[in-house]
Length: 170
Image (cartoon, rainbow, N blue to C red):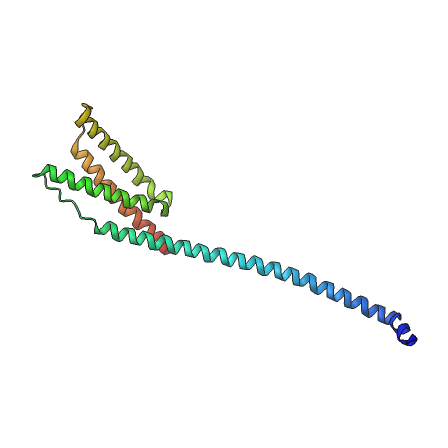
């Protein structure tokens, strides 16, 4: 037994033991570095996957809204029955407005800015028309109101279509 204990305390065994400890330490450090790199890559992959899911969601929802938009009955701009024209154009405008409000969060600001300006102008004219009818406000051209609503209609569809195209290119 004494020989075995002498052997364990020999310089060769000490060198082997120190080498083993050093090798284990180096292997552990390399393992930790590899784990961190793998975790970082996994986080990048997860972000990419989530980004793809968000883009897919936006694309799907915008496409659905465009289908709903296209199913809204169009307005016959026949001036012989003004009451019917105003009713139909108002109903279409409010329907398109609700569709656009659902699409707006899914679109980029650059795709909606012009549409929002025309919407604000149409709303202003509409409010002035109501003031004129009920409160004796300034005269407002019905033709101008209908044109602004039609412009909003066209720009809304264009904004949604542009949003779909932009997502399709990604």
